[in-house]
Length: 317
Image (cartoon, rainbow, N blue to C red):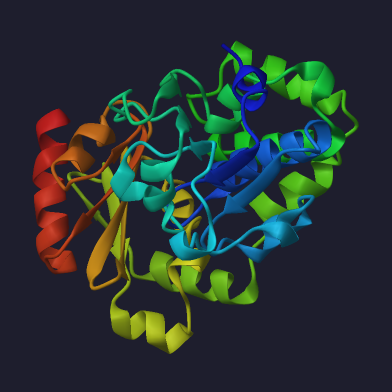
């Protein structure tokens, strides 16, 4: 079954991603939204996402994104589609309410921690580099416009670390080649959304790097921000999405750890290079993700949380 088979049976469609949307989440959801708008003008389609980096606004129809799903203002959808999200707890913009009432639901995801049964129809492939790559192969390539292609390209770029992460495969590059053939402005997308930062992001990243520490014989680099740090720099979690990837660049390290406060807890971001399965580590903290990139949450202090993380990582090393 392809996405078009589901769309042909729907008059109303709602699209959701995960909390604190990253590039792949925005790229895949907005890519599907553009695809439906371009090819199914009679379908009433809505997209719901929480706040995301302003640089992603270069994508077509990004101004049409709704920030939250309001049950009282919307009738149950014929089809609710959840992208790049491995659990109901991770759904953003109040989307869980919509999925519970929708006639049909669909999950398109690539997280290894996905239980494969979140929706009535599940397209889950942990070998895919990104939800955007997975979505590309579920769409009719002849119906993919330049606008849709640019969204999917952004998503793949961000979840592959601009094609340098181990999740990049031959199939990934086949998708990229086809997207380039659509005439997308790939130079602008990769420069403005992946390689550049705002002034505040630059300052905060510098502070995080200045205060980072090494442990386990230099195999782990870690750093964190406190609520006081967040207030001092007037920064929100949205501006911190790429900090972990900068920490990951410290030479000789296997694992990077970054903690920052979100809703009274500490968000844990984990990245590894070759050996450690950080999905297993994140699972201890109620999270998950991928073998080389995962996250969780902790109610303990940063020092206590990092001590627990180091013990779990040491077991694998």
